[in-house]
Image 1: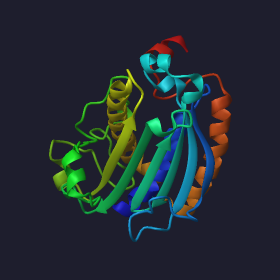
Image 2 (image 1 turned 90 degrees about the vertical axis):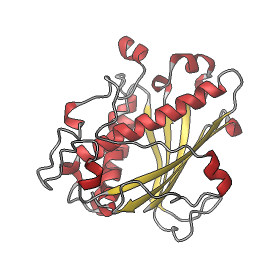
Image 3 (image 1 turned 60 degrees about the vertical axis):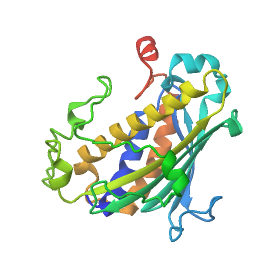
Length: 267
């Protein structure tokens, strides 16, 4: 898809995925969703100042490994996500009131049109930061997904869009020949400073973020016929409706979405 199409596709898919992941007390609570009125600290990347600001709370008690939950107090299992969507540049900051400075997660995304993932330094990192950076490629067609995450109707190798004729994405080099094409470059920075489980949790965060990116973007592509043709006005209306639905879903007893196997068996 084009980068312009992806802007609508991503926001549509965020709303739908939020509903799929909310239930039984867990999930997403939307506190704010309005145009950006002030810059974060530090300010957004030069030239990207206008867009949409959101503030959400993620309740994740049943979405983290049991061992981590064992050491985590109950009031530490909710995370605040503040996002500045100045498309094509976006910044997301995730914090936790209980852990304060001991936990930090930042995701900065640059969406680039006519690109298949070969730009060297789209985030303009310093030489020192480039040495620390680890590049992880996410191929929505060929990368394996967990058996519990797999859905045939969300498999890009089997999906063909009726509206656009795009897909299926077949072969190792599909991204070199498929048009239109864009790439989302995500810079993920995180730390977790608790003793005993700090390195374990940091490893979990890295694995979890990749799992989220893979599953979410498989959905984005396979939901093409749902979002294609929608306008940003349609998206804002959908977001308002979704906020009310999320509040209702969290109040229901059934757990939904990506949850730990132990909880899935007992729910």
